[in-house]
Length: 339
Image 1 (cartoon, rainbow, N blue to C red):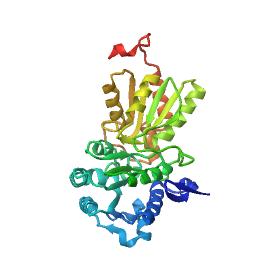
Image 2 (tube, rainbow, N blue to C red):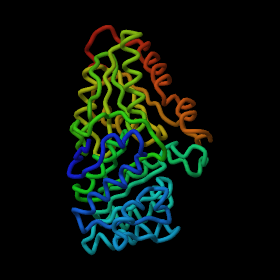
Image 3 (tube, helix red, strand yellow):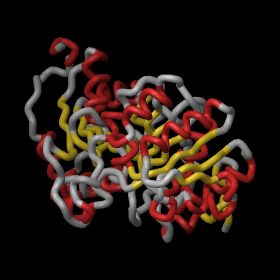
Image 4 (cartoon, rainbow, N blue to C red):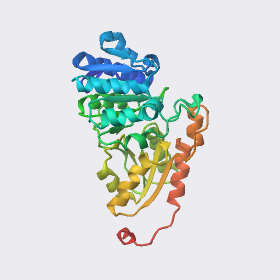
């Protein structure tokens, strides 16, 4: 059954057989048919990042600059200045670190309408080692003025994110994985909007705020805890890291007073840090913990094994929730006096 995703047509069941990158390649190609101003660029990674799908359909609107990531973003900036809408795709480690200056100065400084689809992010390229893992990109990208940062939970949300990015004016960084990350959503019709979190589970004891591949794991952990521990867990998919949904965070703090963030990223500067900033600025107290990659270079292995090692899977999240639930607080409910 064909489904229409925000103006594009594909088969929703493809989410079970295609990677996030393959889905975005198809969606971008669909968008290209309606928007002749879209051009696609890569640095010799058309096949790996799946932007080659666009090349097959529009070879005259596709540009491979070779293994020259800094030049890649400079070229994209020039195209945006001329009125085109460049979509750039390369590995997250290259986009956020090798070409950081060009993204910052050429694109963000001029607030240009360039869309960056960064693949192989987080631990998804596990066997390639720490040089190709990318657990610092969220902290880098959210620090750049004018940059919007989106981390889809699965292929369906990736499709929604790409369409929303094309409609959004200004630079956007979309972070996706490499392999067959499992899907969470069964339909695209759940109200995706840049800057607005999605509540997946209702709960009053603790709130898990997750992003990317951690979203499915958080939802599964919440279901287990409800059934086996009688713990009421709220789960929020914070797909947009910047601008972050401040209202959703503050409501969660007031509702559960226990917040756990889960991200496939270093615990410095990413989702956890962004959420913590909102909480501190709000003046409302709560118990707060972060789950992510600690202050180290990640070890090498299959992604699933790395998720388990760093407690990013449902088992690790369950253990962390139990730990946070075991903390003692004041007997009264007036947490305002703790500020």
